[in-house]
Amino acid sequence: MTGRNMSSNLSWTRSLPLALADYSVAIDKDAALTRCYFNRGNLYLMLGEYQRAIDDFTEALGPSKDAVILARRGQAYEALGRLDEALTDFREALAIAPSLESAEEGFARITEQQKRTDRGK
Image (cartoon, rainbow, N blue to C red; front, side):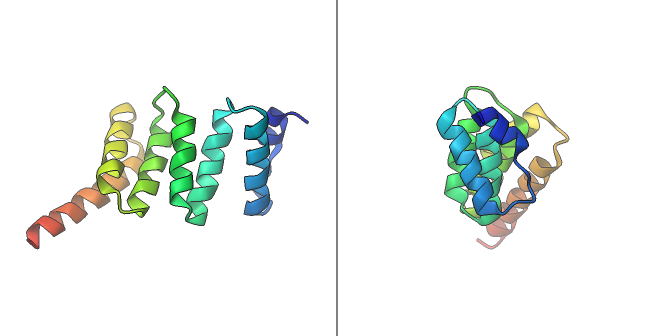
């Protein structure tokens, strides 16, 4: 079975560790499988392994700019408290897809938090 077939046939009903292993095998066989990086990044995000998620989302982005990937990476940055980087990703995502709900919500959360922090100074 090729890396492409493994990634396309992966069932989300399987355990997360098994899914992570399957995506890793697919990536090892063909590092150009950006969808596998994105999917594995989503699993890392769900597991709270935020730096690993950031690394995979960055690989999935490559030279292209995809709003969904940027928003997901923004969520991981936000979870790590790296709010400036999160805000940058949410802004970029919204520039590409102005109605992307996850980017809108992330942007709103951070800007509201910054307003509260500024008021408290």
